[in-house]
Length: 165
Image (cartoon, rainbow, N blue to C red):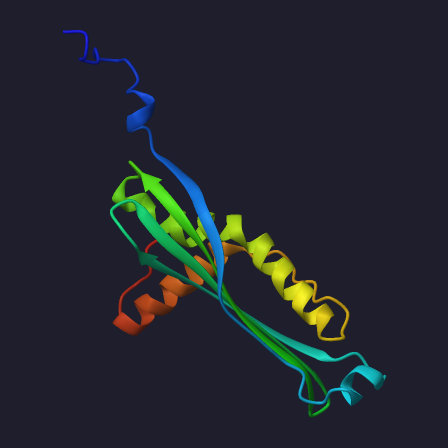
């Protein structure tokens, strides 16, 4: 039969593991400038920044996953909050033929790495539109974040963290 794949021959492209970005979205965006307009006019020492990031994944259909980055940044000068910004930015990914064991690394590391530059751009733009210099976030090591989260989950469960491949 012509449809059978002989031994030692690579499977067709349709069976190869793949993933693609179907679309991107902003689910939630909040910017607070509680001291405006004084916060924009006052000079002083450089503010302190507190930046947080989290990754979430929700299966949408058999081969579709929503990967969301939750980013928040707060700038303070002494006890005064200059601004507080929160963003939930997501991407919908189509994932085909990826082995179950590799799915967490793909969804929690590679997919966030792909959409992070867009989320960072949204944050920088919103902060700038709020009257401040654009917030320039450093690149994020999503593998380190994944490993840290796995260790935290394992510690809560009383076991040891699995090592990523």
